[in-house]
Length: 231
Image 1 (spheres, rainbow, N blue to C red):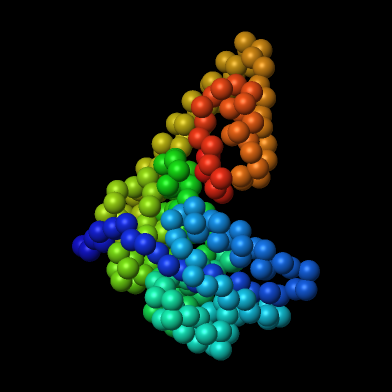
Image 2 (image 1 turned 60 degrees about the vertical axis):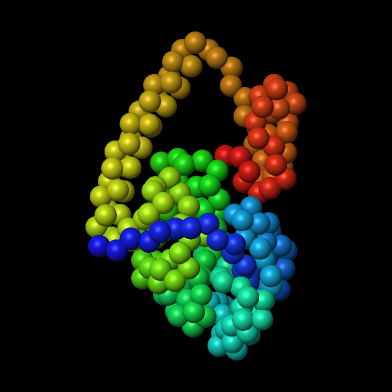
């Protein structure tokens, strides 16, 4: 049985996006991805955009861009890349093999931010399902780099990457989640019977919801100029 000891390291990343339609603003999307990366503790040292009719089914970007990204990784001493779209298991594994570095995507990045903010059952379930589908590529990446984005979460610092153990942990979390749902339904029912008034503040991340809540109620909720600072 092999374990990986995850250590906090400074991550320097290259952001990659694919422009497939004229009305898409991939540059703006990469700017937001940079903010997400900063929230997760990574430093963006370069951005690459490729114009294609569709993303490459095997490696997300074409061979020429892969070579360009590899050169940027070496030039800026970067240790990972983050793709703007969600990668398939094959794309992640192939790109990781071609670039010889950790490969992440927007979904993995957001899950990591959620895990760093609050260790909820749903977050760990999402992480385990994501990792299980991409087990081979993540095994190589985590073994080589030993930590950083994608390794945080409600689980232990030493995470054994094994489908059987992931399956057992997922089953346990699903049982816990059912109990949470049952408790919340009971609480909601009691609230409705007592005719308690309920209000919600809804908005995109970093829109100012926490600031508004604190202004109205002095709730003392964390206020940060970061994406997904609070959940």
